[in-house]
Image (cartoon, rainbow, N blue to C red; front, side):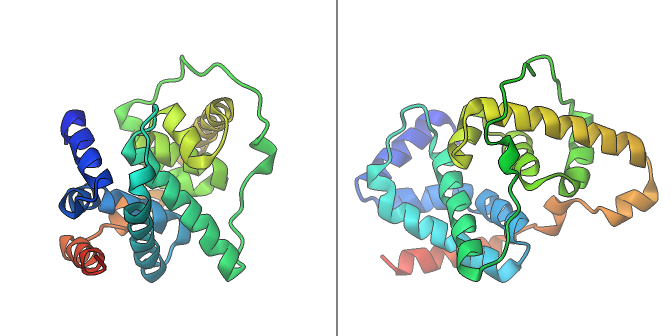
Length: 214
């Protein structure tokens, strides 16, 4: 969806157009589900939380103001908060590296991620801290900018840059240690993206549930 069409949909949705919101739902459902699934690692919980995200979004979209934040980042922030609330309610622990909350700004403009690195990043992401893996997930898998990632996570941009830098460094260290061509390692660390593939039927069912609440 091009930015112009998306902005029109957002404006229509803000004015109460349920069909416009349904189109936004169809555009972002799979990505939000995948993000939530990575965080909670339970299909049923992920499906419920994803529907909660879009139900909350539907109720709150009238108050959405772009101001440099895309509707995509807005949905991911709702999802991030939903996951945090889920862990609080279930009294489970979601490890977050508090030490990085005040990380100093680092220069990573020269740090380049090539396309050939992406598969390795996905396989090794689970070996990182929660904070580092979440930043890399949003930046390189979900394709959010540094500013959008900071907005989603409620962190300073400098902190996001620091986490990204350290995450990339740790990933490359892991990749060198394990060997990029190792069949054994590839089997043990299957691509989490393929594990969490969401069928079109599930997305359709979720959309029907959302519209039925109208």
